Image 1 (cartoon, rainbow, N blue to C red):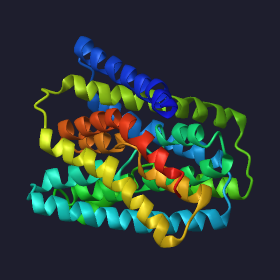
Image 2: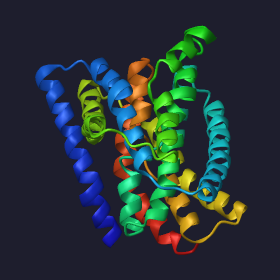
Image 3: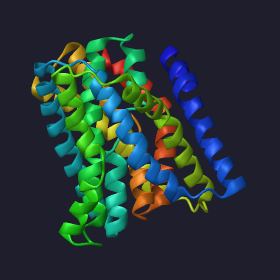
Length: 306
């Protein structure tokens, strides 16, 4: 019950307030959502990725364990979703949106504070979550964009789009600077920190603006299917992969918890930026965030069994 109340008060309520503000602002001023989307892709996302990577501490052994887990988990989850969308006979646009709503999960804004709450600020479990966050930042900005553009543009044009995104350069830059202990001048680090601190607010406001602009023709069955795969199937798969690799203790618990969080705002930002099932994507994020206040306490309870 304590976890339930904490998650409700410290995760769900603040997120819901920010989303509501975004929806209200759209209703009042008809804000251009494409501009907000570009700000997220080209300004706020690169800043938070750089900050988290540059300030994190992780060992090579932890890195390899987490990467192995992620590759197996991601591959199995992708295969499950591919089977589901083909059985459902979705059109291509919905197949991509459904896939994105499950494989892209909120490993930063939601998972980082959740990790620190559950594990009492443990630096080791935080480093595990940061590695997951890196992967969950890289994949939407590479595969996610490719999947949305493959049928609309040539391979070269799609690659130009991917290579134009700053986040794919920020990741190796931040890791190199941290590895070689290169100090970032305060005059540069300070504005980057300011921008990074604004990421969550801007992303949630963007989601709120999208929800405010929607006609709310609810994609009931598809949204529920997405929520089921993201909040139930994914953590169960996390338990399985941990068992398969023989992981235990804090490592196993942190990895399983990382699988249980709701759909990422990346799926919405991609859907808006590339005009693909934006309403479904927004509804999937919103509902999975709400339902997660029920499912995550259940996952936390079963972590004691690992």
